[in-house]
Image (cartoon, rainbow, N blue to C red; front, side):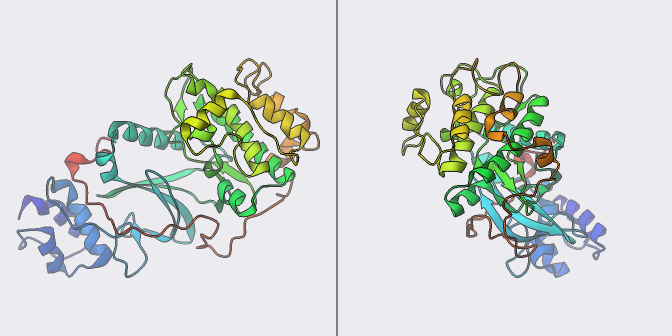
Length: 388
């Protein structure tokens, strides 16, 4: 039997399939011999992939099966079944999936994308860092990682499922009432307080990375730019509208960048857009460095005062970074009628709840059509995660 089919023989043995000794050429001949189609044919291809080095296999559809039925990934006996798409970023697509009756979010990264990326090592390191942090960060205000699945074409992070994003909520509503903005803000502060206690800086906090559950409570996600630090770092990263001035000036940065972003967050929730906007990123950076903020008349005066305390370039004056730490924020007048502990313990009903029609409902997320451009299977020699 060809050495290409040795992994296939093991796979067939595990699946209880017929003997394959008489098949000596390719996995495709084996698939025909066994009468495999759809998902089973794809799983055979994936089982062969480590021994296929330079051999090009037909690309799978979706997460690993034909378009004739639900897409699946994971083990054949207890697979994850994809029920819809939640969103798409620069390096990954997020799907809603289920295993049995339990639903999850699946963040799918194409392995071929790592090889073709202009800075593959940087992307690989960011992915490794995110996986490591998600395993380590266990808190009610952080989206939890449940499983990591690697196929011949993809790395899939199976995470706790949420029911919407703050970004989509702001877009659909235009802007949020003050009581809703405060409700969300308190929880985000608690999430940041926790990750900072673990010496982690998020560095990309924005509405897209704040997820909302059906009960109206939120959690932080996307730790691709996050970093474990006990000193200053100098990497320029983040989304232009949310970058702190010390990052732009390359002065070195740390936890205070997340407190800066909280000021952006309050403003955006109440107004509907960030305080520093421009069609050109350089224009955004110039406005950030100028420090000029225009507050509409609708802006609550106490919220305005807190935003100013957060959006200051002087680290010696920025709330969250002073002697009293997060207590300066918690004791601010904007929260005078809120008992933080009651809210965090969910003893206070959320002022809003996303409408979820069914377990497979994805209407609270942006809709993205499937792409016909499917990636080839990555051979073992090119697998960026082979040493994990």
